[in-house]
Length: 187
Length: 204
Ligand SMILES: [Zn+2]
Image (cartoon, rainbow over all chains, first blue to last red; front, side, top):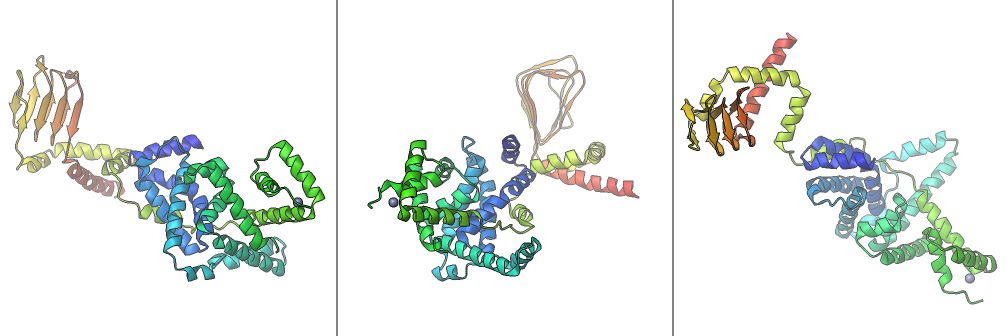
């Protein structure tokens, strides 16, 4: 896979736009997931995730191949998400949607798997509560928690993405987890 | 009982998957004995499992398409290259037609000044610089707004700006041959036009 990505990046650097479509296809889920968990809103996540890919394309020449490409992408998406959080009015947080327009689909999916409607609903409720708890975290804790849990990233990778010492990353994860425990531990 | 402060830290190290064996034993032992820490640990683990079990939310189905539509225009040369590789027959046929319709060249060059680096043995005929058969030209040749026809030998580089190079089978260039064509866009336009005509003819 790494070789495939490297070879695509080479083509993009030469100006081949089609090669970039492969990159987007490959990483879109993870980048979208990151933005969604950071922002708690599908439309904004879509917007920021797209912007992240466009930035990556435009700045591809600044990509230093000693870094993992995914880390570089995550860095761009993280920074854009934080920018967006800072621009956001605080009251937008309140109606953080969890399922958005796919709510019904998810509901029926769960129902199909033999889950009772009550359970499905409870699970949706829970999803919403968990996402809201993430959104309550200050951005520096939110960032590390989201990176750690969306892609099971190692502390080393997170430290590379955020350009922070590994000790700082560790402390932030611990504090973020403690804060989440207070919101969610009693459920 | 007063709990060692580092117990909570050890819990997090455990959850990070970065705990040393002896510390893990210490943690387990303490949790076994201490209700408060065992509670704390249980809540932390529950919290983590909530986060880990958040459902996957998919981006829109046309996500990639939308990104691609919003990228800045790619380099033209790449687009040509891709088009050429995807349409080899049309490309070849078009080039052929284009070459016979060489009057196109004349119209393009009308307002341009023809010039070239003066060297011994070079012959000029109608805006075409010729390296004659059996002759050797020393040094780099630059032709502007004209063509070059190489039948002999060039000991150096050949650069053609806004023009065409014709290398005869007997011709030889020791250095690099390069065509710098601002006119390339214009050729491209013509190839496409001719290409379209050919496609139409073939379809009929
Ligand atoms: Zn204790």
